[in-house]
Length: 76
Image (tube, rainbow, N blue to C red; front, top):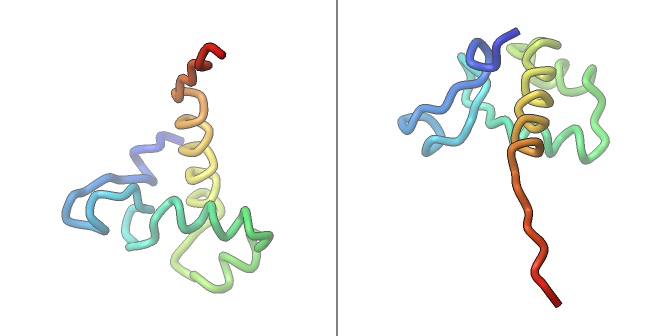
């Protein structure tokens, strides 16, 4: 699965936030729901346009960002 098949960034949609293709649901929103304890089944029931693959793509996107983020410690 390619992230670009599921996640898009378009300045005309939600001010350019990453969203699930074909929706106006931001990746960060889905991640927040998961972080708050909602199950995948609850999310899919509340947003019937979403699929299991969409949720996996959100997680993969978050993983990509965490991997690419470089933090440098500030000397004490």
